[in-house]
Length: 345
Image (tube, rainbow, N blue to C red; front, top):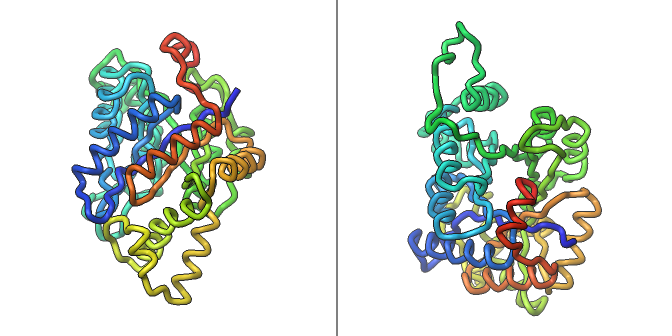
């Protein structure tokens, strides 16, 4: 059986396009992923970044879920320190009521933005993340005891469970917590240079079964650019390489084109940034990409791969996912099969 594949989307805004274009492209991408047999379509929370339009993933989740039929739609993730736990519980109870059995709640502890924008969000102290997470779950389940200030608080809509909760990580700090709480775990290998294997093992070692997750389920996210030829894939990948250089310089703008990347005057320091980022990218033909992803799975024992493809051309992005799906042999299950598979696909 083919390893499950999923999609991580940031609603990228490419140079020469608008956020409205990004949202239309997002829906087209989700519909394609739905048809091809990808398991999930997750949207990330980022703020103050002109090349990323997904500042409000809960809104985009509803939009995507209403435009697709089978695929699970969720957050990858909601940055909990930016929000009151009750507010997130309410939003995802609502999404679960609207689209029962199709919503995922991925939770992260990072702000997803720069320090100044983060201060405008008036966030909670990130050190309180474990307490926030426990509070959100207790509010959803109505588990605060008599005498607690939140004992009478009710999350509405009532009679609806919180969707399956996944903790997101890029360093391994949340891995053991995810296991102990019986949640899913997703590791961000698409931008983190830290090896994913040790956190995934720590997650499995600590895992306690829960209703949503009777067994551990670990996702590894990977940055992938797939094209018919290696040269074309490498050309498409230069957009994110230049974007990464600009990010390190504190320069925020739309996702550049390969032509902009080719014309850019890279300093030696820039080239070091590019080389380091290139190590995180999986780039090539379908067969080359399959070989590299298979090696990643063998190294991490991931249960699922979540693919993010950030290229300037929307058509090239769609084609990358088509080639990947064909190479991996994934097939969209029937609705009956999907219901039997449950949360972990």
